[in-house]
Image (cartoon, rainbow, N blue to C red; front, side, top):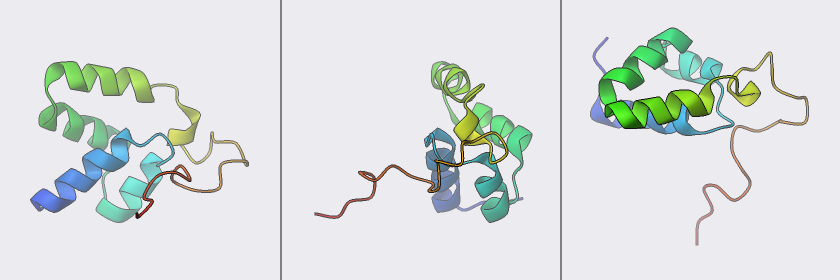
Length: 83
């Protein structure tokens, strides 16, 4: 699948966001968790990829089935504030 530069940038952003589950990326772009991992490996520098993997590994908010019912939104309240 050929993605636009804008889509690639958005996938990377969503993958880094703690509250955006892999299922949301799959719904929007058709990439499951293993596809996202491969995508990130090929689009990030090695150090950045390792940092991202250690950050998302075991993070319950990255999986809808594992997240607490208290997490009802995909982003932090302070994110996307327009001045």
